[in-house]
Image: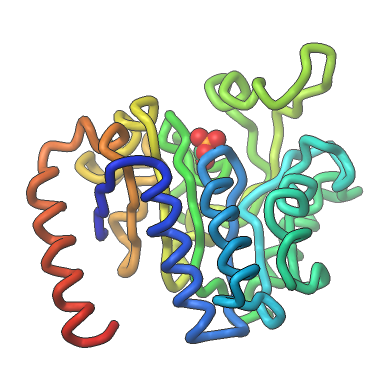
Length: 263
Ligand code: PGA
């Protein structure tokens, strides 16, 4: 796990976006795994501006989102499909046919999950997966106690996640308690993982993910098993880590190596 600690959320977004831009420049037909939530929004803004400055094109890119609420349609303003269209896809040159979000209103959600897994496989797997982290350590909607080998499936949300996401729904609006989410096993198969976390409210989850035991109680700790996971956090989200100086030292050494070997 590579830990990158930066001053603030703008720097986190810029660092993360740069990884994606470079990746797509090297592999224009990259398969991206994408995430929703507040944290990726700033990164998406950076990707849009990179596109506007002709620094990247998404023409050949395909995407798979992590998750979707069960029981709401793509047109619903709180659906993750709607979020992705408005925060990213509508502003770049991606072919929407190549963008996939689990189907929240599928007649048979279980079959939809299986189709999702097959579609990822058919594309040759996810090259680079963007992640946020919940305050309870979830990745996607893989809540604590999720199997570390899980695949795309229907998942019940915890009270903590429902409360955290209530801010997006108006008081009289139906808020789903179920979701379709890629599994932890699905996420671990991505060739590269980039996780962003900002703010003090994420400090406990970041500590558990990076320095805690590998445990289903903190689904993000599964990334300790990934061979190419980059965790990008701001000082506030890193505030409970024990080894901050060491992580900063490694990052400095990595930068030198990258310059020297043009990586
Ligand atoms: P947030 O959500 O970016 O809105 O904090 C992260 C997550 O729940 O994965």
